[in-house]
Image 1 (cartoon, rainbow, N blue to C red):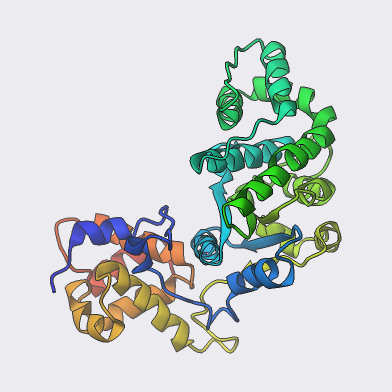
Image 2 (image 1 turned 180 degrees about the vertical axis):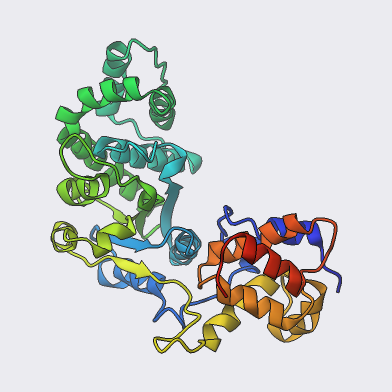
Length: 374
């Protein structure tokens, strides 16, 4: 089998999230749960499907940026859908400015994504509260927002588009919405989420799950309230995020997991955050952890030769590297950080663009340029 260099290069894009529900992406997926201390997404899923299928739950998921949270959440989405749940997954960073996020931004994003997902399966709800709110906002912002009754999600989208790139306009919007936060929350529950669950049950669905990804990327900046943004959103305002009347999974900044606010965070949500660890490549005594290194090697070879078993791909290593030792060396210096490993592969290919295989000297040159100690 010959290496498809272009496909391999694209498969190693560290910014690409694997959508495990798609057959093409599924062949790249490697299960690291054995070396991470358990399958966290199964714990998240069990809480929804077994412990509280009919009552809303709210769970928190964290980990280093780039460690694979989005891929695991896509796996959770696929598993929940297989069990009959309607799952709305979205990356909050696509519509929000991570340097400046407030509670109403998150709530309206949830409302937008849920309504858009429902409209895609011909469930068109008409919450009166938001139809009135959009009219008032158009007058307040002096911006026309034309909206038909069948386009609830479009109304949210238009507001987001008007304010995302304008801090001044965004500030005016928040000034208007902040006193109405509880009313917005109640309207989302009573006029959108609860009716949505009823309509979904009519279609044979077991419930509604919303997965809000990338909130772990909010800047650790100081808010006017005197709190840093992560603590402000999830601790000081966490009670409101916890009141949505459907199953919700939020990603949260890892800094909260190690902060003095962890106790208050747990009290706000009534659950402990679940943390996705790095893939261990060393033990506590600094000896090499071969099981973790092996899984990282499998990850790279799966990107190079998708659909080929590890037993077979071991014989193909020299199509990508000059030796198996070079592959192992890269896995070790990645520190078990999946995104860093993929980025190193891409950067080395750029360094040796005229060649096909990564050789030991290329790795040494690259690592020395990036001040990585071996």
